[in-house]
Image (tube, rainbow, N blue to C red; front, side, top):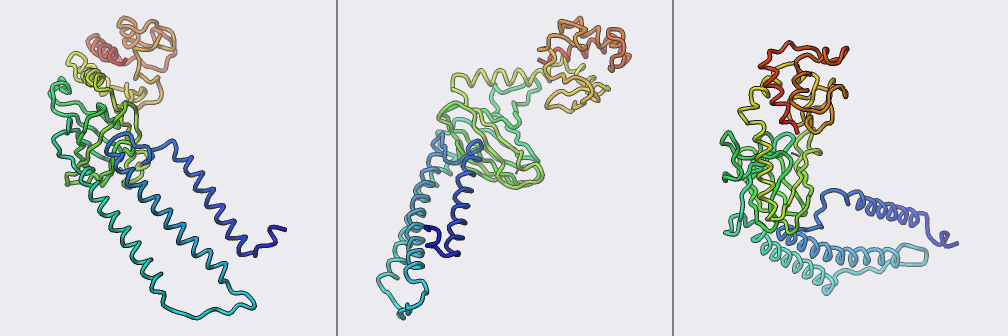
Length: 351
Ligand code: CUA
C-alpha cells in the first residue's frame, strides 16, 4: 500500500539514491585500510584536515538547503490535473540572498586557505630539523639522507633507502623532490600534503609526524603501468630510537660495500649463481634454487644435508655440491679455492 502511494518515477529515484548511498558507505570501508586524508598525525596534515572539514560541513549545509528546496518545490509545484502554474518573475530578496551568501562563503574560504597555505607551504622556516631528498622514478621512490656523519657509508656516499622513508617524530622534515623520468607525486596523507615531483624542476614540501608509527603513502600522479604500486612506507621513529635505526641502516648498507666481501659479491653476481638464486632487492632473481636473502638465518642448507650454516659447510657445498648431495640440481662450477673462499665470505653477509 505504502509503495503504491508513489509514482514509478519516484520509486526509481528512491532506488537510485539508495544505491548511491550504499556505494558511498561501502567505498569508505574499502578506503579504511589505505592512505586516508582524514587521519592527520602531524601539524601539516592537521591544518589540511581542518580546512577540509570546514569546507565539507559548509558544503553539506549548502547541499541540504539547495537540494531540499529543489525537492520541496518539485513535489509541491509539480504538474497535476487542476493546478495552473503561477506566472511571475523577479524576487529581489531571494536573488540577493543567493548571491550574497555564496560570495561571502567563497571569500571567507579563500582567506582561510591563504592563511593556512602560509603555514603549509613554509618549507624554509628555521625550525626545519632535517632535509631528505626524494627521487621518483618508474616505479619507486629513493630517499637520500643528509650528508651527516651518521649517514655516511664506507664508500663515502650517504645512506639511501628505497620505498621506505624514515624520520624522527616531532621534527619538521623538508622533503626535496625530484623525478628521473616522468611526473610523480609524493603523498603520505596522514603526515602532510602532496606535491608533484617534476623532471628538471625542484619542488619541496615539509612533513612532520607527532607519533611513532608506520604511515602509508602513494604516488599520486599517474606515471605508467606501475603507478598503483608506487607506494611509500613512512616510518616515524621516537627521537631516541632514530639514531639506532640510522646506525643499523648504515651497517646493513655497508655490508655490500665492505672490501672483504666485495670480491665474493662481484663473483656471485657474475657467475651462474644468479640464474638460479634470488637475493631480494638485487639483480639476483633466479627461481630454480632457494632464495638466499636470509641464508645465515637458516638452520641448514642443501635441503637439510648440511647443518649448521657456517663457513665450513658453505665451503664444502659451494666447492662441489654433487659430492655432498648426489643428484642435486646445483652443478659443480669448478671454482678455485680462492673463489670459493671469496663467495663464502660474501654469503655469510646474507643475514
Ligand atoms: Cu609515480 Cu605514479
